[in-house]
Structures are given as C-alpha cells and as structure tokens.
Image (cartoon, rainbow, N blue to C red):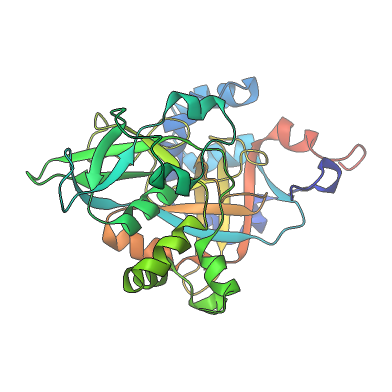
Length: 329
C-alpha cells in the first residue's frame, strides 16, 4: 500500500554524511546524467542540465548545485538487480522456437486491466494477428525477459535483434519467488532468479502453473536501431549504463535524478547512480533496481542481489529545501 503524503519524511543531508562519496567516480556519473537530463521538463532540472554540459569538476558540480535528500515512506530499503538477457530465437516458429515474444495489441492499452497471462498464452486472442516479433526456445527465459523489460535475441544466423518494453496488460505483478516461499518450497534467503529457473525447468507442469501465478504480462517492441555497444533503452527512451543506472519508483524519485546509494550485504556498493528506469516491482521511496549490464554474467550478479541499505536523491538545492516542513530550515 502506498504511503499517504503526510507519512513521507524528507531529510536534507550534507555530502559529508554520504559514506564513500569522496571515493566515487563523479565524472562517470555526470556522463550518465547528461544522457537523459535534457529530457527533464522541470525548469529546476533543465537549468542544471545546461550547466552540466561543460563542467571541469564533476564532484564540485554535484556539491554546488544539489543537496542529498533522504526520502522515507515507512518501508525498509531494498536493492535488487536487473540485466539485459540474451535469448536464442528465430523470426519464424519451429519445433524448437515456439514461444512468442509479442508486440502490444492496441486494445491492451485502453482496456485496463486486459487479459491475464494465462488468457494471453492459452486463449485465441493473439492468434493470426502478426504480433509475434520473434519466437524463442525457452518459456522460463521469456518469463525473465519480461521481468527485465528488455533483451537481445540471437537468431540462428548469428544476427541479434533487440527488444524493449512496450507496455503491459494492467495486472499487478506478483512475485514468483514470494509464492515459492509461501508454499514452503524454499526459505526466503534461498530464492534467486537461478533457483526459480531451475525449479521450473525441473518441474515443467507445476512450473508452468507457477508462472501463471503472476498475471502481469509484458509486451515488447523491436529496438534493433540501438547500437550493440550501448545499453538497452530505459523508461526515458535512452540507453542505460551498467552500474550507473537504476530503476526507481517515479512517485518518489524524479526520472533523470542523481541518486546516491549505500547498498549493504555481501558486496557493499556506494555509488552515484542516475534514475533512468522504472519497473512494475519497484515500489517505494527506498526501492531501487541496479542495472548490471548484458548477458549471463550480468544476470548471475543481478540475480544474487537482494540487499538492504539506503538511498538519497540529489535534488536541486531550492527543490530540496522546499520539501521540508515549514519552519524546519
């Protein structure tokens, strides 16, 4: 349940209170910030974007024009990871490649919610409409492609096509991992993306029904015009950057804003990230999904991540202090 506006707490901090701030690569963060700041409409942000174009000292730029704001909504912080998967597929259906990657039907944008995952995959509603972008060989990998929101599909001739998020069916996302914990199949600390993959592949009948537990269904569009060396497109329709871009809840964090994260856990991370993406499972003021890159190694690293910590949004100075209650300054 979303917090009421009165339940949200804002605390303006000093940069000296950010653990590891002085050791970060601020120039790398500034480059990522520039990639999307021109798409921010608010005058407070557009003026800073103009200044960001020619900055000799990236750290000084952030410290001069921003203030870190800790935004709390009563929910504990949670950091997870995501990546751009690579799947094997083809442009035509065959005995091997028989699981469709669908484009979004027009009616799915206007009827909310539309059909469930089960209805889409088992019913006649998608048949004969030419909505298949490609066909892949693994329904579990396709399911995770939908969770990630973008990916690359390797065709039999070695060519790659890229797909990006187009929309979803309007049904609320339900966690498969949480369902396995609820059933007593695994303890919470045992669940990861790889554990779910293995379980579904070992138990195809039960596994198929498990995937239907999540009624949310994601549709794609082909984005092969994005250069291979660039990251996938995020929510701002710009390429995102490995270990510099995060997905956030835009109800709390403006898209394009710098965000300082202090992720704890087995592999602590202190880094200035840029909020350039969203996700149906990313809800809350202290919730972020860290982009780990493309391919299997990135997927393994992202899949292990489920850590506590905290995050602070770097807001334009005047905007930061405007968030405080009257008389708090």
